[in-house]
Length: 147
Ligand SMILES: [Zn+2]
Ligand SMILES: [Zn+2]
Image (cartoon, rainbow, N blue to C red; front, side):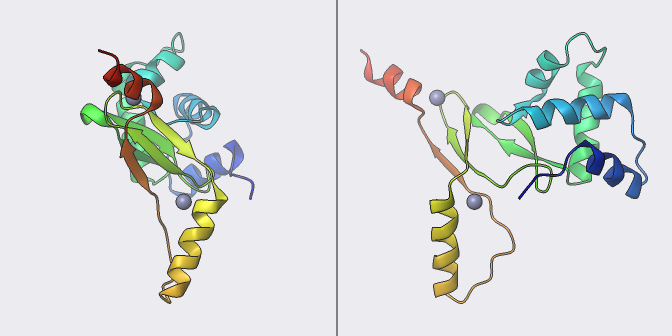
């Protein structure tokens, strides 16, 4: 399934009577080009030179979260990152490292098929799911093993 792009984003904002501003478009483009959730500092680094400051980024993320175009992902150390949700992003689940907070997206049909078949067995119809699996990433495992 193709994900919705900029055209759909613009239409979505209009449908919800939210103004389409260059800043909102910039943020959307950055988020769509990223394959991992972005924190506000991550976003700030990627839009550097565009005149977008942290306060503006917070406001934009607030608006986009209310519109359910993005959602917050909790990372380690109370960090919050943001990512686009369907249909603006392809469905995926997360592996979250509790040490460094790194979040890895999982796009795996084995997982999706297993969930579907488990739910079917229980006669359960899934509306939505997003899994967060917590643990230690390879780098942090190495760091804890070395003396
Ligand atoms: Zn899934
Ligand atoms: Zn880690």
